[in-house]
Length: 362
Ligand SMILES: Cc1ncc(COP(=O)(O)O)c(C=O)c1O
Image 1: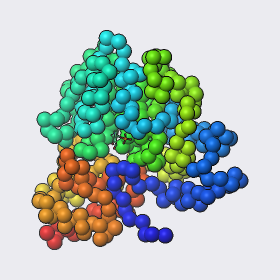
Image 2: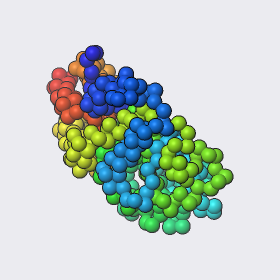
Image 3: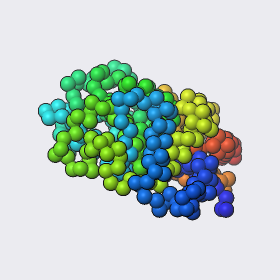
Image 4: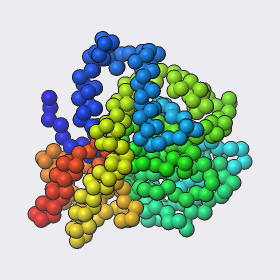
């Protein structure tokens, strides 16, 4: 086998080795079935069990109450930028968007195509380096819903507490921090996440929606855009991404059995992130973080070096140490170390060591 590198990509991102090994072992023939998970019908007892276990694992990990449905969709998170307003925006009512970075801005722009959607907060003036404070949010209590992005993957700012948006149904794009911590599910109306960062490979998007909100999906919606129909057909409206859901089952099993649940995952994630932020903070300004300290992401650590030349040398040295896919997004520049759930602590330690060594030699 080729040697694996530490993959700091923002997504598709690194998966737990154990999951890859199991998928590899069963790739040619699932035990007792003689076909692979890439070839099997979605209408068979094996896949019924896969769907059942994946949902049960998610329900256990996140303590999802019975009055929520768990749906598995395709189209990635960007399809949700359209599906959320198509299904939830009510006649004559607006939607309130908390704009903290590129992804929430894109979601707001998409929602405007379907009705009135406005930014109840927008951190553009400070290049999306922060989250709103309690006093910044003044939502219209008569709106259809409030929307936020729990982790802005590009800028590296993350909510570790839900924004205070009163009694409005709270909708969350959790694409890049889903399953990184326990969630107070009673605060949410809908939460969605593409899989390719923390829960599996690209191809499946999980949507967790409170039952009462399904009543807003009208028959006029295109069939494949209608949450209520997915709920009615238990995500089998058409052929679902069988293999992606199978991998999600293995990832959620790993979270339960090997990690020991989301409290443990959160503690682990905090430890990993601190390794990098501590180096940034102790560097005397050599490394500068993009996000304000209080709002830093546990998933995407964004920072800059003093100039482009140093940055190039830093990235070259990182690759020679097996630390890959670290360049930041073009809109922010610098470095972005994506350290999702499955990034081993050893990889983060190696990166922290390299940061210290590089500064010394610079
Ligand atoms: C926070 C967030 N939202 C949405 C998306 C878009 O996801 P997809 O490519 O599945 O449409 C991404 C992708 O990186 C993301 O990080």
